[in-house]
Amino acid sequence: MRYPTTLSRLLVAVSVCAALGLAAGCSKQIGSAAASTTAPASAAAQGGSPASASKLGDLSQFRRIAADVSAFVARGDLPGGKTRIKDLEVAWDEAEAGLKPRAADDWHVLDKVIDRALEALRTDHPKQSDCTAAMNDLLHTFDRLAGKTS
Image (cartoon, rainbow, N blue to C red; front, top):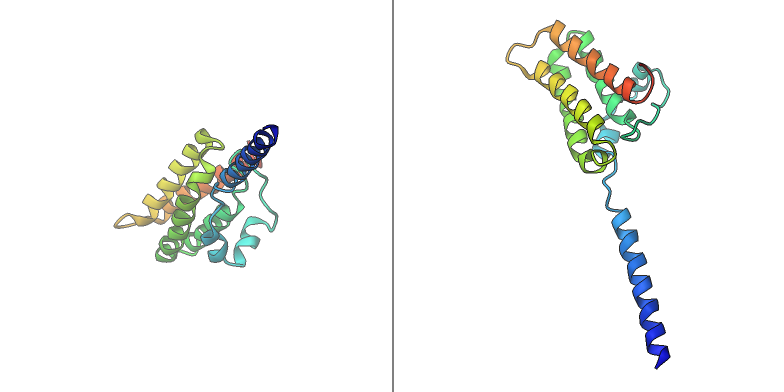
């Protein structure tokens, strides 16, 4: 009767390993929407170098979209910035489940700054100065969380 016990223990071990493997693969990756919506010009706006990883992980895809929005705002194209920031909102929301557990405090800080940028661009009568300040704050927050600035 030892053989069935050994076989069942092996079966349980394999099942546990499979379940753990599946659970590890459930973490949501940073949005493919962010990767597919970034413009080539955004790499130049960021300086062309990948962002250092923060506690939240690699936020460079989100920062590239924010840099694109900032470029629209700098040109005075607030409607274009409003359209582009939607891509950031969607990508950020899609990635929440994978990012927030890594560093909830940092996630909340960045989420609030993203919300302020969304509000500045979506107000009924957006002001260039408010949008510029919100985007500068957002880019600075990305850089600070990545350890690029203090």
